[in-house]
Amino acid sequence: MGGIPLFDLMLLGLGVLILMTVPAILTSQARRRRLDRRIAGLYDTENRGVPAVAADAKPVSITLGQPDGRWPALRKVAAVCFGYHRDRVETTKTVVLTAIGAGLAGALAAGWIAGPFVGLPSAVMMAAAAGGAMLGARFVFGRARRALAERLLDQFPDAIGLIVRAVRAGVPVTEGIRIVSAEMPAPAGPEFKRVIDELSVGVDLETALWSLATRTGLPEYRFFVVTIVLQRETGGNLTETLDNLADVIRKRRAVRQRAHALSAEARTSTYVLAALPFITGGGLYVINPDYLARLFTTSDGKLMLAAAAVSLACGLGSMSMLIRKALS
Image (cartoon, rainbow, N blue to C red; front, top):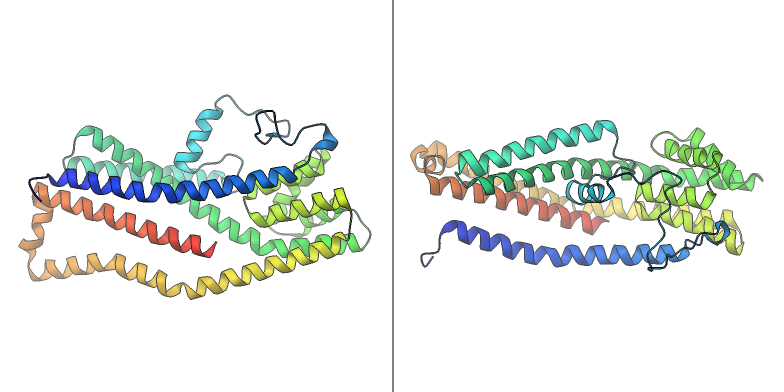
């Protein structure tokens, strides 16, 4: 190693990992921002006297009459660090409490590993505790978001079908949305019920639908809003367009399910690779307990064990993220 301490090597490896992952994250966020700008261009609020783009070339934020709160910057930091979004449909009380519990557990575990177990300085222990809290909360919110998105996407073609049949029967789109809110189970039904509630207090249909698309965070709901907006502006056969949209969503869901089945081998490999260190360690402990005990009794062994745990967690997280990106 040329006299370089092991902890410095760990920091160097962590820096290299960050330098490799940050560009990919920034590229993904840039693509999302470009998509948001393109959708904002279609979000024409001319009929309500509100410009679609403000003077600083940023999309106008419409809060539906609700105050933005006293601490918007703090909420943005919480959204980035912990994955919490107050207006998203997955942030229910149960999910928030579970995320708090997971964050506390992650903070205690990471702080204990970095502090009493490995013996690192207090600053490193506090940083590890903060990172464990953020990872625990993000895990819970991300899992709840993905589960809810799957349910919303499964119900969306049926909801569009109800709206199409209502429009063909001669009723307005708003009445079709009212039928969906009454007939569809959760979570799609309550979300469309919120649209009806906003319409009943005087909110424009376009604004209420864009609010729905923002809460769900699904591109399919944005396609639906764009379809309704373009039909109101240019006219045309709305039922045929919505039928085509429902068919496209069903095909996209079928392709996603097929890809999920084809990726079963990669996910199984992930589980096997994650279990191998524990199986190998257990076997070594049975064969020669004194040989493995050095990882728990010496400072260098504890540091190596903590580095191995961090590496394993980073590897599992990277593989899981790559699989989700490939299936999205």
